[in-house]
Length: 447
Image (cartoon, rainbow, N blue to C red; front, side, top):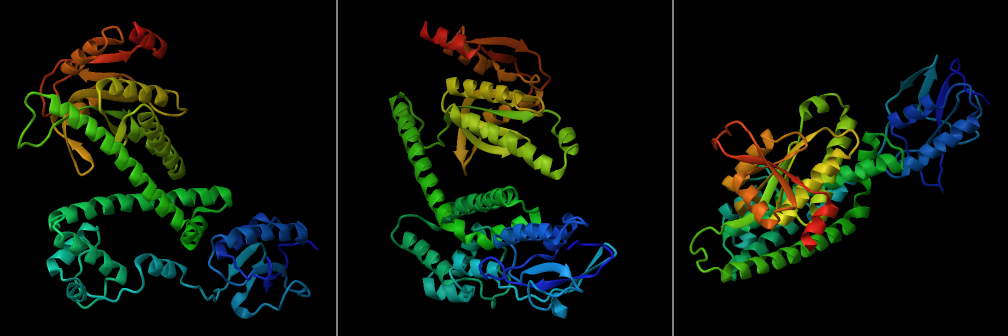
């Protein structure tokens, strides 16, 4: 049997895939019909529709499975279609009737499970159950990054929320911390969690698009529907990453404190300034480049830049502080690591196809670490130096250049580099640093 644009077609309801009735989103079925070109045998189209049936198993809201067959034929493949499930094609144009579906609230079910049941407690209820003040409760909610609670009578909190607030109250009751510190801790975790879940969601959407050959909208539906299948692993992965990074931080901190204790005059009653190598790597002409890319190509481009930077920075022993638009801020515990890291990042980006030129900076100086970020004049200097650095080059200030020379007088090429007056800093002496190739550098080290 051949499909023809001159004939009328309708949907027959059938059960497929072991009797499990699943359905097509209207757009998915429409795409399937369009791609099943006129003149093909129905059997060929059936194969394609069965492929779509598999695809919707992973991500489309359940409705009855539909198979396109001629309206004038005997419905051998299923029951007679009713008016609510009818889709007619005339003269090559598809007209979609309103599909009456019972859509189970899958997202609602996931949300209720994640937040611990129904939202049934007001602020006053939580105050009564936890012994906290109204201010404590509101500050907690604000630190979580959620909107201000304006309606006093609207239930906002679940049993899970109440348990967490009781845990906070217990921390204060036992004298382990105060309200300000608790809010700082929950603010830190909430800020990272907000970014983390978005990153995880987008990563899964991208995978579903490729693995199941879905369009982006269908892939997003799929991830929302099946997030529970990934939930346990993602939580386990998060706990593992936290433990590993806390262990690494403790080791670094112990070594640094031991070194500070050896100093004759350690800082007392002052904010501890840490000596670090830090700098920026910034894309040149990012605005021009991004304007020429499609949305998907732009996402791939930014992801390639970020992943390349993160991989190289961590590979050589430094850490990414943050991505700042089209730049990355990195930090290393020692100058040797810092200069090797920035050199390898620049080279890796140059070797990456379709990646524009970059500028980079390196500064050895004091920083203050707070809120997972770093601050201080040295950070500002590194930012300003990066903005005037030579294309695909590394720019340092005079004191960092001297420190590099002391580190290895033959391991680097250090050449004076004229720069304009830096905004907010003034006139400084700068130099362009070139790391000798790795083989020569190691030979110099052995000597």
